[in-house]
Image (cartoon, helix red, strand yellow):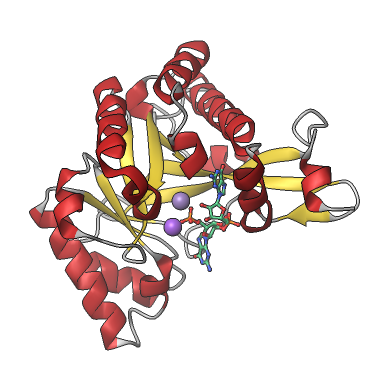
Length: 254
Ligand code: G
Ligand code: G
Ligand code: MN
Ligand code: NA
């Protein structure tokens, strides 16, 4: 039994589920977005983390189909919340390198938006510097096409990759997500605080919105708020949870 063999057909066997983790506006305290995070509920092995199977799916190409399924599921869920009368929020979906390189990525996403009747402005895609740097000119072109559709773009795990500032300026993204490794000890480690402060200052000068990942304590939250961070995400607010747990946290349109 290898994970790679088990992965084959896992979607068709309905073993994949999408969990959602709220992103909180640090000024209003309201949920402004959720991040879709895939989970694999294997019948005998139990819950398998994406950290384990995404790299396998990335290597054998299964990620393209899995990634499309996550996009479709997440967009349909976001639309369902709107139809249930909740204030519209962004749905943030992680893209993998292999997906990002697909020649029909923009068409596929447009089709999913049309199918699920979700506006592009209610969708956000998370990309990482590491895979954007693979083919910079092509990455910029794809990012531009996605921006033209009206989708929000976030640079995930920011601060851990190349962080080449000259390229950052050229990537048409809207949001920087400060990696949780910095947030984790932002209160106790002056170096992490310095990096966090620098990322926030950089985002502000480039007029990008800034999200802190991995917020676990009130002290971290207070610090990030004080430094002018826009949004927070982490166990302090909520772990990634099934859709039905999210609904009661959303605001009803009054
Ligand atoms: O949710 P968790 O912390 O276990 O996720 C582990 C890793 O898997 C994270 O890096 C996260 O970005 C990634 N991941 C979760 N869901 C998806 C997905 O739908 N697509 C891709 N490409 N990566 C995902
Ligand atoms: O790579 P990416 O940023 O997409 O990864 C998101 C991962 O971070 C998810 O797997 C999620 O489960 C995890 N995560 C979310 N909030 C927290 C947190 O507060 N603490 C820790 N340790 N992990 C978190
Ligand atoms: Mn992410
Ligand atoms: Na991240």
